[in-house]
Amino acid sequence: MSEETIILHNQTERELRLDKFLAEHLEEHSRSYIQKLITEGGVSVDGFPIYKKAELLNPGAEVEVTIPPAKETMLVGEDIPLDILFENDDLIVINKSAGMVVHPALGHSSGTLVQAVLGYAPEIEGVGGIKRPGLVHRLDQNTSGVIMLAKNDRAHQFLQGQFQARSVDKQYLALVDGRPPTPQGRVEVAIGRDSKFRQRMAPALDRDGKEAISEYFTQEVFPEHTYIKVSILTGRTHQIRVHMAFLGCPVVGDTVYGRKNPSIKIQRQFLHAFRLSILIPGDEEKRTFEAPLANELFEVLDLLRTNT
Image (cartoon, rainbow, N blue to C red; front, side, top):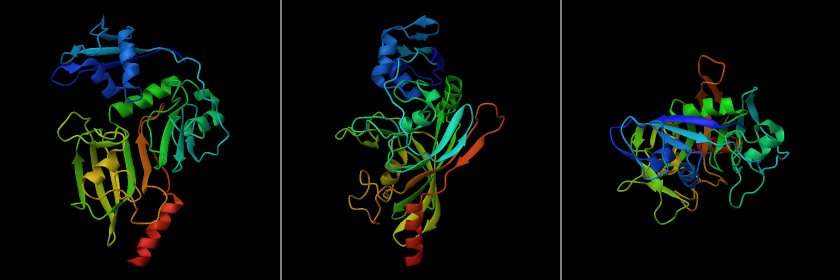
């Protein structure tokens, strides 16, 4: 894997702290990794190397980040079946099943999507980083649907740039408890780490958080549930789950932000990434990829329709 250079600009009208600015724009890297890049001379501002993570960026400042080549990965490919929706020399699009973790983490050292793709397409090793090769975005463990991985560095930078620029159309299907306040609406509520439970996210109403915007559209109404489509304009951790819970209509089966005992007998959360529209290398217009609703989710809808 070759060295990667990323150019960013402070497009706000206020001063921003360098490490926080980079964490906002380089979400695939941890805050500690970004701080290490700064202290080791991997970041320049307006052409001058900066070594202070708390350096303030002036409005309009240009930030150049140099990501060093990844070291040899310790991940090992595994022979795990994949539901492949599309593949070419640059990328692979997969319909991820619920329950599959995207990349290795504490408690999930094997059986992940990344390891399955490494077993199928070993060339993604090291693409975009050693810990999450090929990934340009993520899905929660218990969310099914469309996910894309790059197969080379050029494609990775091209695709990930669109996610960072928020030019990708990401649509989800969800069943929620109760009913949203309006048939369709827009939620603009910042999201940050829960101050008491660090593994959870929470609305950041009176503290710093990351901007998060979701739009929802009612598809079907049931006596105690609502089937909705959700478009996310930002890609924050657990965004749809946090926003729906904030509206008082949590995702069915979400025992973290919703009911501890799900209102419908289901072994996962009813959240499915069904459509992704993005410009892929070599194309002049966006291409749309769709994943059919998982069978267990179809069964829930059929049950509700039968009992209505």
